[in-house]
Structures are given as structure tokens and as C-alpha cells.
Amino acid sequence: EVQLLESGGGLVQPGGSLRLSCAASGFTFSSYVMSWVRQAPGRGLEGVSGISGSGGSTYYADSVKGRFTISRDNSKNTLYLQMNSLRAEDTAVYYCAKDGPVWGGKSTFDYWGQGTLVTVSS
Amino acid sequence: SYELTQPPSVSVSPGQTASITCSGDKLGDKYACWYQQKPGQSPVLVIYEDSKRPSGIPERFSGSNSGSTATLTISGTQAMDEADYYCQAWDSSTVVFGGGTKLTVL
Image 1 (cartoon, helix red, strand yellow):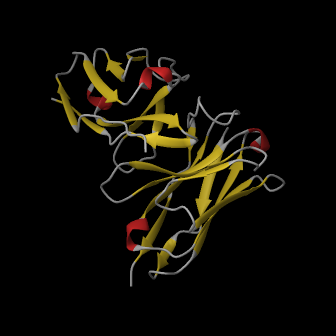
Image 2: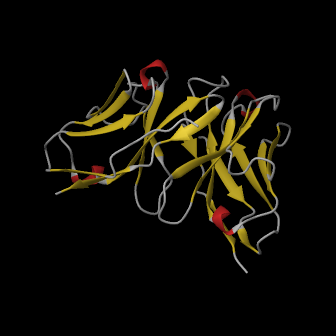
């Protein structure tokens, strides 16, 4: 059974940093693209960042480019999101999502974690 | 940047057919997928690669994609289908979501 368990969310002041983690199990982690998707309170879904199975390819939403860094440790089956220079508008539930085995065109999130809440406020 | 446009809301009577559209430039040349999200829950994939259903998703859910519009169709809509629905595609090495459609079954 595929499981994705996010952790690391919490309350942080504007300008601060947080690192989110997503522990994966139930599939060959290194073979799949993984992504972070966020949802601000009462708003829709936004693709934040994604990383290929090998870690060699990444994408970032324009809204987080230069501030967030995605990474993965395939030996630990764990996905990370380092978030720096946080702003109030980054407040959201952050979901870890499993994508397909191939980078690009057929992007499909077939499994999602339960989400972790990040609140940016003074 | 690429945009996907969905109607904010759609209403349907129980047992009738609901159609939710998702529009984007040459969307038919890309793969579209659809997610269902109920309050307080994580999204669930209901359609991928335009028209394929994951295992466990009822046959009443179907999808199509042509030209500039992808469509999610729910036949024989049930009260349990009331939820927010999001379309998603990949463009220029970025994941794009539509703004979401609230489906009301009344």
C-alpha cells in the first residue's frame, strides 16, 4: 500500500524558513517523479515544485522560484522541500504527491499525502 | 504562463449527468487529468491521460479532451459526488491546475 507522510509544517514568521519532509513507502521511490502541491485556505490547488526520480530534473512555480528548493534522498525514500524567505502568501496546506515514472507530459498525481499546514504570520 | 479555466460552480440533480469543462490553449495536444476533493480531505485522482479511470473509480466518471477543452462527465450523479473538481495538465515543464469547480448535487 502506497503511503505518503508529510511532516515539518508549523507556524513561522515572515522571512523565516521551514523544511518539509515526505516519507514514502509501498512503491519503488526512486522510480517516480515526486511533487509538492499546496492549497491556501479556501483556495485551489497550486503545483509548487517537482523532482524526477533521479533528482536530475526539477521544476518550480514562479511564485516560489529562488526561495524554495526541492530535493530527495532515495536511500531514505524521503522527499524534501526547503522553504526560505517565507511570506504570508505561502500560508497553505502542503501536499506531497506521487507522480508517474516519466518526467513531463503524462504528469498524474495518483497518490497524495494527508498534507501539512504551513502558517506564515507574525 | 499557461492557464486552465474552469467554471466556478456546476449544479446537477441526482441521477442526472454533470459536465465540468476545463479550457486551455491547445489543451487537446496535452494530457489532462481530474481530481476530486471533498472538504477536509486530500485530492483523489478520478481521470488520467484524458479518459482513463484509476482502479476503484466508478464507471460513471468519464473524461474527454479535444481542441482546447477537456471535459469531466459524471453520469447518474450521486449525492456522494458533491465535491470540488480540479483539472491538471503539464506545460513547459510545469504542472498547471485549473481553478476548481464546485459540484453541487441538489
